[in-house]
Image (cartoon, rainbow, N blue to C red; front, side):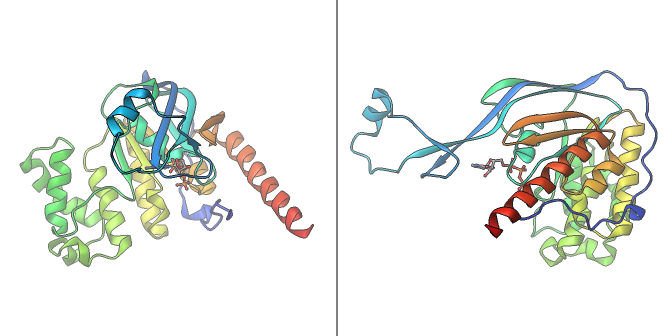
Length: 286
Ligand SMILES: Nc1ncnc2c1ncn2[C@@H]1O[C@H](COP(=O)(O)OP(=O)(O)OP(=O)(O)O)[C@@H](O)[C@H]1O
């Protein structure tokens, strides 16, 4: 597996982390959350379903065989409480379950078991957030703004500011399939933060964009925290997590390994990744 900590980000590109602030009431409560995907076809790491039940066999009698169904346990028994005013980084190696956890908390994936309580609807900002490629940036801002609960007049009023933040220039009036990937992800970020959400979830959104955009987006996230919101931030960049968060959750193979002060969790995670790299290099030498 490849090294997945991003050391590229220069700490000087990121603003200094602001000091501790008073925490408010709970915004997200996750109680023994499990999320299991069902996948058609055999899969390494998944568990193949047991012999199908009598009912399943009766329903499927005569149908062509579709192959075995695997289960991938992506999140296993994760519990935590997040409060207003907290900015929480989510760390873990590739495939450890970070995005699944975020999507389940955002209500986009149903828990297999366990419960998620939120104080208001979370806004999930991901690099894959759906924008419509055939529509212009301007129309996407309208659709996104309406979806986030603004009315048309409010969206129109904020459109110049969103376009300016995303650095679109005249591309605002062009279909999004003419955008560069950086431009598209800047626009996703700007749309998702068009309204200050109570709970903002960011999935690797800052991995794209240059240093100046990272500075701007980090400042915007700080503003959300200042307004007593809660920010969740999934990233492989320890530099960004340290700069933007005051707490971190480390997830490995779907389980919560550590939850605490951002520097302590980042140090422990960094040591884990380095030791794993060292072990695999040693194995290669033998
Ligand atoms: N739609 C899906 N169907 C089946 N399995 C999935 C699906 N999405 C994710 N998985 C599996 O669930 C596990 C957790 O994936 P997830 O994307 O949540 O991890 P991650 O920590 O966000 O990974 P990365 O850092 O690589 O983005 C992985 O084993 C992945 O292969």
